Length: 323
Image (cartoon, rainbow, N blue to C red; front, side, top):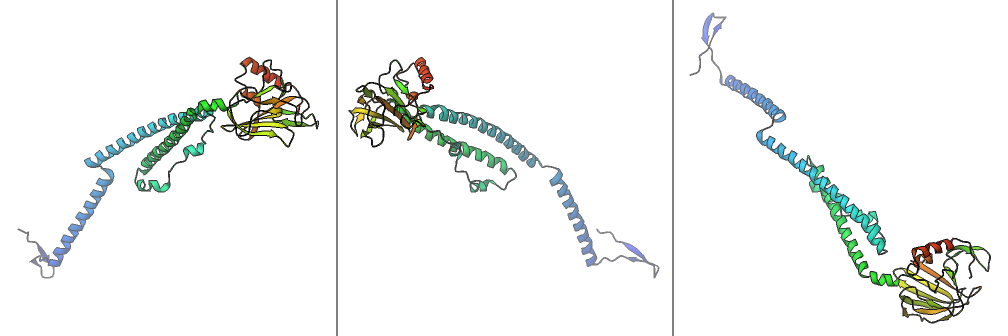
């Protein structure tokens, strides 16, 4: 039952009953309600910002665990990347060198399908950077593994053709030279016997009597067999494949024919003195990808290590070309 309240009327000096209007009651209740709402808001603000509910505490523990697992995952990514880098290094510097294949550039190995739009759906969250970085690492490793797999496929094909390549690459001297004294002039800058100027001698000169047999230094196809319009006289050129070509000049007689396939050690002609030549000899060149290279690096089937050292010493001595 509601309490009855009274107040003293100072004008009439009488005690009168307090009458509360509906409006006053409504205002009073609204004030109480507003105070309650303000109090509740303050309590909720403090609760949400300074205290965690049991469910929130559980979620925070799960987030911390996920962060820890992501750190472990990233560490494993780093270790996998190190192993992959080691495999790539061996591929470029061992396997591809053995089979004379060009190494794969770092830009090609690291090139992947990664794009900004690919990770847009992972962004926008509090810990998005963790997820995005881990996903990028995984994509990069996946891309590099794919490139490495393609490289191994190529190396495997090269390995299957290794026997053919070994038979094709120039590997012997084109004339018999058991005493290593037949080479009269080596690869490098030498004095031209006709013009008396220093010029690059693109091959080696083997001094030998006219009619001395000349051997193909590797398997291949004869691409030139005839008279050269320049100073080489009668010459033979062989395409060995694998970017190698050899040239034999100043021949007295040509035995090989253009388009013919020859084997290493097969006689292709005979030493002569045709063209721009001062005496009977063979001018022999080796080309790799169209560029002349030192032929003495390709006599490994004929020479022991000691003989090769002697040939290197002889090649360093001053000499004059014979053509």
